[in-house]
Length: 218
Image (cartoon, rainbow, N blue to C red; front, side, top):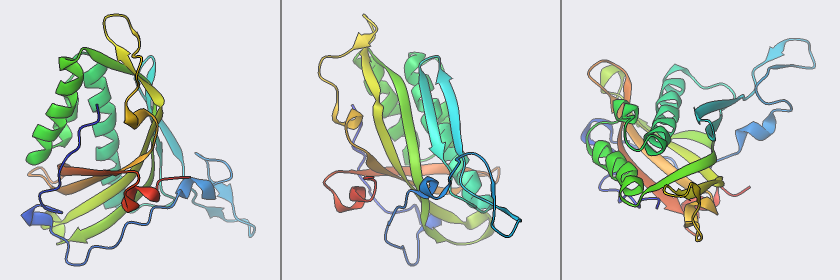
């Protein structure tokens, strides 16, 4: 069910990286002894640690985000956009296409890619339940400055706690798709929109045994 999205170019013309760094995801949340809270350092001062955010999409659907320890303002904004996309796309699926909020955070090629992903569920009369987890979020490439800045945000996605449902019965389908079994790497090329906010412009993903996805195993 997970649509394989081909990468035509790494980033759009407005956000082509001059020197893309290799993707080496690290489970940053493992550094925190108590996710979602700040622990004092041995010297007594506060030390910022990763937090875990849970977004309720529907009564039985959630998206969990394991945030990096100390993202800067732009990285925070990009993570929020990607979080809203994932939550919005699942919200579109469980609402059978009535909720289209996920389209607010995509533009250019990503609009067609996102619409096709949601459309595949609707065409086959499928829905979902369970929890999707986003972790090892990492800006792997960036270029430009100010309103012309572009970046690529990589994220490991684990949907093994999700189940694909037959909409007519509300029960899991007999043969669950591959994306419910193994984590994969999702990349989103992002750029500044006319309103100054970040938008996703292009998607790609790598699944096991691709070397790029092996960093998502834990």
